[in-house]
Length: 396
Ligand code: AMP
Image (cartoon, rainbow, N blue to C red):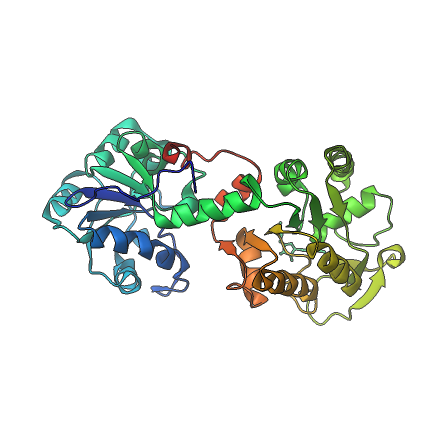
């Protein structure tokens, strides 16, 4: 992506390269249950090691208060080493003597992981002394942790201000994908936004209406928009205090030439839970004692027809209560439609945000989108149009 300092042409041979990684991976009974983040780091580490850099990996893990070995990174070393395909040494602190002597012992092409950054409060507080202690360990800084880029922490924005700073390959891929979706997209662009509530996604919706041609809404948040239009939505989840906000977003969308697409039918049931009898009704006919828990087939067909006119889509949030079948049907059907159009080459598709990754994986399309971001909070802040403190120092 232009505008970002990438690793091309950087002479790293014999240099100590601090790589900010996100190794905050899910662990159960001492085992890493999802290696996606390690896998996405592999390209950068292998490239640097291959070019004879001395690679020093920095990461946070969990939310320890001070040094707490329950949140040590050490047990992760075998999994990291296996996924990277490289031997990984470990230092039991990220600054001071243990870190300095381990870094000094590194030879060209070797990899070292330092202990959890958050064992020191200076990390999250971005304290100058802690930042300087980290920076002393390296000659070059490489940030490959987009998922932590929304945090102005010492190992992110701090060290990047003290050393020559570059984007790692994972960071570069993420920023390139995001730029294609909202920075410099091919129009028409659609955003698909779902999930439970408007209140948690107000900034996101406000940013999107000024950037996309179509805003396709589903999930619980669509209920509030429907209610704001005067539709009787029965017992459906609604944010009564958000009706004015919903109307304001509709107004802004109209002014900006953004079309809001709401469900035209829904899957309704008596309550949110397993074993419910679900039926499909049109939006004008929602029974007073039922709640909308998913978009219906006519809504899916409508969305699919609209997507065929688009060149780019960006997606956050499920179309319904996807955890409980059959209320996953809408999300799965729309996900499959996006995947098919992406495979045909007519659509660039980017999805992301916690529940969305799970929903797209459940739909079996996680490899069929142009890019799926596992970055959670950073992805959402980027969708909100915020400039991320971890990205600024990597700009040319
Ligand atoms: P979010 O974290 O805001 O993306 O919201 C995701 C959650 O919204 C999921 O747990 C879904 O079950 C829930 N959700 C989506 N649609 C509905 C709906 N129509 N009614 C109730 N909950 C919903």
